[in-house]
Amino acid sequence: TVPGKLRREGHGMYLSPDEVLDIARRGAEMGCKEALFTLGDRPEERWPEAREWLDAHGYDDTLAYVRAMSVRVLEETGLLPHLNPGVLSWTDLQRLKPVAPSMGMMLETTATRLWSEPGAPHYGSPDKEPAVRLRVLEDAGRSNVPFTTGILIGIGETYEERAESLFAIRRTARRYHGIQEVIIQNFRAKPDTAMRGMPDAELEELAAAIAVARIVLGPSARIQAPPNLVDGEYARFIEAGIDDWGGVSPLTPDHVNPERPWPQIDELAARTAESGFALRERLTIYPEFVQRGEPWLDPRLIPHVTALADPATGLADEDAPVVGRPWQEPDEGFTSAATGRTDLHRTIDTEGRTADRRDDFDEVYGDWAELREQAAPGMVPDRV
Image (tube, rainbow, N blue to C red):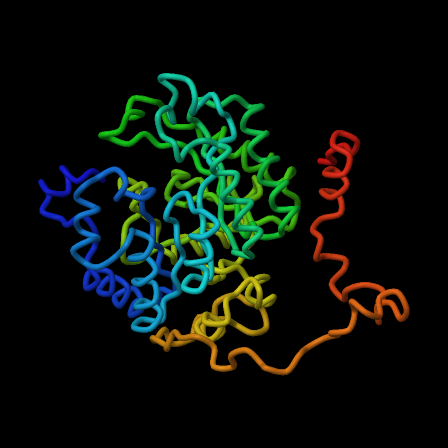
């Protein structure tokens, strides 16, 4: 929130390292396995108090502080950081990938008019420009970062704009295979915001958006609806097509929607069972990325993730102890011996390559339907 409100409530501009670690330690004691870092876009560029705090504590910017705290959480508590620090550049993704198995940022919408027109919900917010946010999804995919994104419904978008946002996510998911989860979230009005007078999105609208997302994104997509925003109608949203309830904390509130308390995990499991499904704990990085390993998982994080993962499924090992482990550069270093062929520049015309194609040829270039669409835009119909 804004610095003035923080001062009135007696809070600092940032959580101190001791406060961060106290929350993380208490979470680990309660069986949590993820530490969610959620914050606004580069507060030091807008608020002098943020710049002063960072300077006083020796950090170049907020992301440097997030990175340092992520390392301490890994080493001192064993929780796995998931980072939601707003819009990230290519360089930011490279800085943060070694300290967090996954990251995320809501796309929200691709409707440019909701950003460009005076009076629109995102007007005047440079980080809400759809092109900027789409670029983050692209850069995360190129950087092999398991990434969570989603859309926000009920902020003035049309049905067509809502669908276009889903297709934009699908394009990125097909191209890079890095979208690990898509959140379909209904707008809830917040006090002390410009949109406090707008009506909440209807649950029927949310269920319909989930159903369309499941059709558009396909059966392998992971689709989430936050369980504290569905007013207890769990069965409706399971039937609509979700397969994930997101992070649910026994310790901290939903800081984005603090007026909406989390359901108890036992209750959530019981209500899920009523719809014929078993609720299983996952890690912040999804099973398929755990099992793929590098390059999706930085070598410095592999010991932390594998210590908490069930090797057979990639889901969480619910009996695994959550304890701190060292975070450091891999010991192997670079080998001095050359690997692979070093004479190809001389022998390509005489001997050719020793193999026709790469072992991972079928997947390294992305989704074939997406490649065809890039090669001849408009020639390949979208199959829904």
